[in-house]
Length: 334
Image (cartoon, rainbow, N blue to C red; front, side, top):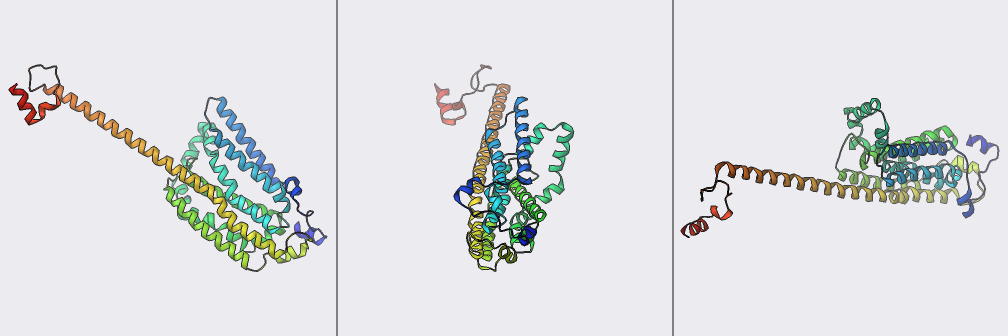
C-alpha cells in the first residue's frame, strides 16, 4: 500500500509540529484491538469485585496504561508518522517490545482470567501452565533469545523495508514484538502464575545481555548504511531531518530508549526480589516459632509425666535452678 501511494506522488503527512504531536490522529486496527482488550479487562475486574473478590487498583492502572500507550503509538502522532520517519517507527517498535507488554504483565491478566473462568476452563489452564512443554518454553535459555533477537532481526534483515512497504508485514512484526515482550515480562515478573520460578538474578542477567545488544544494534544502525533507502528516498519528504539524520536519531532511540525503557523493569524486579526475600524470612521465622512452641510443649508434657524430683508435690513443675549442680545443692542444704 505504501509503495502504491509513493508511486502516486504521496509524500506523507504534513510537517510534524508540536501541535501535531498532540493532535495528529488516524484510525487503526491496532488501536481498536487495544481498546477492546482494555474493555474486556475492565469488565472482568468489575465482575470480580461484584462477586466480592479483591483486585489491586495498581494492576488495573498498569494494564490500562499499556492499552493507552498502544493506542498512542498506533493511532496517535507516533503511528501517523511511523511510515515517514525512521525514528517514529523506532519508538513504535521499542514500545511494542518493552513498554506495552511490561505494563500488561504488571496487570496480571492471566490471574484475572483464572479468577473468572469456570472450573472447566480453569483446570485445563492450570495443567497447561504446569506442563513440561510450558516449562521448557519458558526456560531462561529460550526466553533470552526470544526477547533479544527480534530487534536485530527486524532492522538487520529485509524485514524492515518489507514492513514499510506492506501493512500486513508491519502487523506481523508488531504482533511478534508484543508476543516476545509478553513472554519475557510475564515469566520474569511472575505476577501471573508461571510454569517456572527461576531466581530474579536470572532476569538481571538477561537485562544485562539486552543492554549490550541494544548498544550493538544502535551502533550498527548509526554507522551502517541507510535502511530501506529506496523507500525513504522515493518518499521525497520535503520537511524534517534528512534520511541520514533521521536514521541517526532512530539509532539513539533503539539504543538509549531501549535502555531507559528497561529501568522500570529493573525497579520492579528489585522490588519483587526484596519483597519475596522478606516473605521467605517471615515464613522461616514463623516455622522456627512453631518448632520452639512444639519443643516447649513436649518438654512440659515430659516433665508432667516423670514428676518432680526435688519435692513430693506431683503438681509442681521443675524449676530451672533444680538442674544446676551448685544451686540445687545449696537449696537442699537450706
